[in-house]
Image 1 (cartoon, protein in one colour):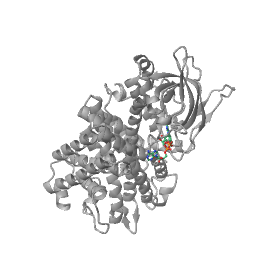
Image 2: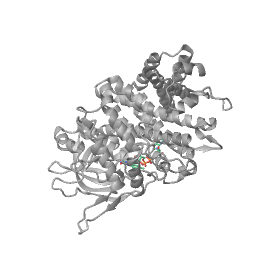
Image 3: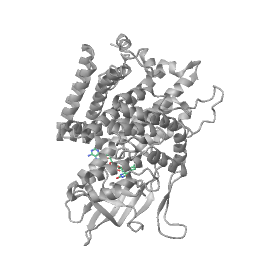
Length: 576
Ligand SMILES: Cc1cc2nc3c(=O)[nH]c(=O)nc-3n(C[C@H](O)[C@H](O)[C@H](O)COP(=O)(O)OP(=O)(O)OC[C@H]3O[C@@H](n4cnc5c(N)ncnc54)[C@H](O)[C@@H]3O)c2cc1C
């Protein structure tokens, strides 16, 4: 909400409206220099700075308005025609314009020309922009990601004719010609258990396909195009009998396709964006790829969406942390700034560790995805395991960090005028959709059983730690804890039941972030990343005496929270 207290007395509650969310976060800039090619970083930086300013002001205000004015379903036109439409608040439409048109978030992976860059951009660029955008608006990022992911899956598995017909609209930056994407999978009896999908696909004599059945959760339900899983008549049970279809909202003559939105869901979060229930009543759809490989192909779209979910969780955490740091710096109690109170510093440092882990994970996944898309087989293994890892742990951590940030603002953190309640409500969704926490943790174990993902990950840690060139004692501590995480995950994957899937996934997530942060520290020359890595080891991996003081409870925490770079010598002097 817009600040109305800019010139208010200092006793008023501090309001962060108008701060540039890129500029208040200097570690982001340093990491982007590391993870983006130099020329692309130089080109994108002014766009990031502008987006940071917008996210801290205009977009945030629009997001608050859109959250308070959810979309409505209209079944008829005013002159009585049975034509459904969603009435979206102008604030949401303006957010759409920023995301799809100005920043081309759904297009920039697929073609050049977005933000003046001649080529498609690598995943790190897309995630960097998303990371900033989502700090203002979370709900819309779902349709944007589905549009991007649908285009990716269509390009991978669709026939050349289908791609030629629909890709230009999917990647359009013109709101009048843009076709948004959606994904209709979940049914009443088929959520996690996708193999129970009952939606029927019937092939007509002329070779076209018609879909029949109910889809129970459909975000962006009025999208121009949706990927739908359905079971062709007579095919086998389970996921092997599923086919993937592209469902257009309109038929070629402009009339509505044969499906209806039955109602919209009343949701805890993402209230700006519509999620509905759909009944397919003989809707015409195009088969995508091979008949018996529908689920495998859909997995590509799901995984891209899961990765995006992890990125959004990282962004939400950063927003929560930004607010908390701001309040702690600006607010005084008992004659002292909150940021100067060691008890408060511990809470903020903990939030920062979890937040920075997610950001590192985001960049690691982006780097692996970029390499995998260029044909690197090891990187493909890495993406296979990093995707469920970030989806699982970052989305869960976002719930906690958002709740903790709420408390740092005190009573106002609970009041809907401020960003915290919206961030908290939105943060709880990440671990439910696109696969609940249990389901994605199970996917981590599956990636270990079915391929070389764990070996690829462990080898990556070793390479990163070698490059980090840690002193022997410190390296030994890393090695011991990382080995423990690998062994535990291997045992969990080999066990007859999946009881420890989540514990194993958490261990791997922490190990991955610790190794990568140590590497980032060396590469950026900023020992804060190493301090964060050590805090991951101490607080999230090592056995702890609950009555002992932290090894990192030093004056360095203040440096961390002040967001000023740290020299390695300072760290070595202060932390064993
Ligand atoms: C706001 C919102 C928007 C959504 N948008 C879409 C959309 O656009 N498209 C779409 O297709 N879906 C969408 N979904 C659906 C979402 O993906 C599903 O709700 C989710 O996958 C879980 O399925 P379910 O609700 O059937 O729960 P269930 O599958 O019934 O799961 C219930 C619980 O059982 C657990 N569980 C299930 N199997 C196992 C197992 N083997 N081991 C251990 N635990 C298990 C789960 O972890 C969960 O905790 C949306 C959901 C929400 C809330």
